[in-house]
Image 1 (cartoon, rainbow, N blue to C red):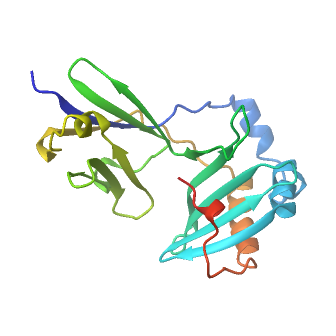
Image 2 (tube, rainbow, N blue to C red):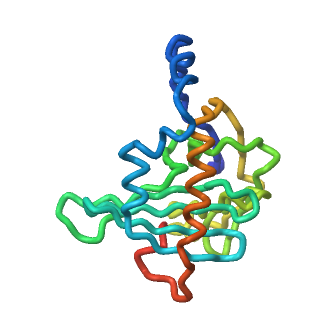
Length: 209
């Protein structure tokens, strides 16, 4: 039986808080986020700004040694990706843990990827086979996501990557309306990032995978 390549897009489930909690949080001041540990850590972090076409990348270095990269769409002013640098158990450079996350598994007849926390509708995606690089390219028409999915199984056997073997589905699209406090913080923080001047040369540690 001919093995096909399957890509499944899904989003993580979210916890819906009880009604009483929702009612109580609605009374919180929209500027309350400025008193949170998270917001203060963003303010205190060392920040570097990079601009690439319609993307603005912010690299953070926190006081506790952690590193984070956020990517914003300049037109929509919406964050489209966040990555954390995870230090290995034995030290070293570590790896980048990217949101959205990609997981991989094999089934009896398919090679399968699941991309989580990527909530755009199915018509937004373009999924194509790149036989030259032996990878599957997933991109969105709104330019908020781009990912190369490597297929080493085919490369090892020198098997061509065929577009006809790609299947895609979109499932479990769970949305949670952003509270007003979160909307206010998103707006406020993007204004703060405008004060971070872009640099011309791209530092190596700002290139999130």
